[in-house]
Amino acid sequence: MAASVTNNHAGKATDGATRLDAMIIGAGVAGLYQLHMLRNQGLTVRAYDNAAGVGGTWYWNRYPGAKFDSEAYIYQYYFSEELFKDWSWSEKFPAQPEIERWLNYVADRLDLRRDIQFETTIEAAHYDEATRRWTVRTGAGEVIDTQYLITCCGMLSAPLTEVFPGQDSFKGRIFHTSRWPREPIDLSGKRVGVVGIGATGIQVIQTIADTVGHLDVFIRTPQYTLPMKSPAYGPDEVQAYKERFEDLRQTLPHTFTGFEYDFQYTWADLSPAERRAVLEDIYADGSLKLWLASFGEMFFDEAVSQEVSEFVREKMRARLKDPRLCDLLIPSDYGFGTHRVPLERNYLEVYHRPNVTAVSVKDNPIVAVVPEGLRLADGTVHPLDVIILATGFDAGTGALTRIDIRGKGGRSLKEDWGRDIRTTMGLQIHGYPNLFTTAVPLAPSAALCNMTTCLQQQTEWISACIAHLRQQGKTVMEPTAEAEEAWVRHHDETAGATLIAKTNSWYLGSNVPGKPRRVLSYTGGVGTYRRKCDEVAAGGYPGFVIQ
Image (cartoon, rainbow, N blue to C red; front, side, top):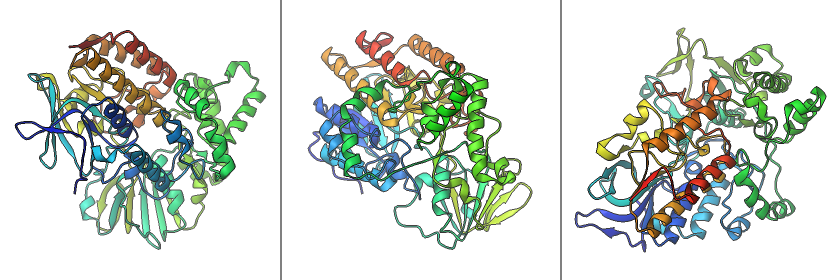
């Protein structure tokens, strides 16, 4: 049942529609902050979420082993020192239950629940050119009439769940990691198959291996991995990071990836021995620092990429030992950092367990789910009691294309993005007035960013933009086709200079058949992106039609 909503002053139109100034889709990191800011402007605003509680990705992703891979003290809101300091983390990289509790703490401290409607699916949003407002329909038949529509749906919130024919025939249970049940799932003694070894699959595999009866891991694309070190935080450690509030608030928005560390070494300035020393030192940090703050040249220079990649391969080989496992699990056809880099804790050692089998499906793919388990192309059937799909997402676009969003002239966002994925700075889309977006393509919040850093920046920009419109007595804002084309061209030129653009991964939508190929995330850097967005606002929003 949808949660009750009180004191939000949402009006009812004569046709029975709920009338709002602003409507937010999503109650995760971005949605909560967006609601707080717009409500503080005095707007009539409500957030809607199909979950039963707040948290967004941290509500849905409760699979075994789900954890941060951003340091807890930077995965934070920085608009309130009190909010920051009144919450204490238990370790450097906490697990999902603690993260979900934190987001509930935020919702309660800011008194947000009274303006959030849970267990509500948004099915359609159509722009009415006559009224210059959006008409939104929910799965339960509610109609919302809103001036501004803000999507805070998240980058990875449209899971690829129906990936194999025959899934309904399976006699056991199938779980997608991002739709893991709230109730405990007992895997002890079970024959379990995990499909996928990206960041999520790795967390699951390393967590359940010593519990299940037997574990089959179905491996298609090997991943470079880095070991995670997550020390517990006592009072001294907590006090130490809380004392850094102002430093972090000033630093994070301007680094290349929104993390506290940044690229500080130049490859050509160091001798081979010095480079090796830097790599060893950063590797020992037990974080994503090797990826996000070692040598930026590895994203552009094939020779540097090869050397850094070989360093990571060497580390992985030393732990795997078995040549067959090395062939299966260590990448050789793409460079370190051009795909999402997972952090792990004794993941590689899992494959040495007698109850774990590594199954290569690169040249012998899974073709169907059968009642007994998974069938491969050569006819082999792997009998299973439980199938866990760590099969990823329709990243960046899927959350919006699964809603029937229609702009001017009835144009369909699903159809538009089906031809060409385009946005203006990841904040608006030409042809869709008063539609504001976060965590969509062509902005760093699409990936390659500490999400709270980028989502705060985007929601703040949107809030300031709406405040500007109201101050000017204007009601509608839309980017011009020319401004959007200029941003797309800049984005593509920036991405095209990187090795990321030359690989296949969800960073380019390559995991979704038929999806237009484009690097989804802006690769010019978080600080650069922020500066460009700030310049647009300071200049009175050139490139946008405001009426």
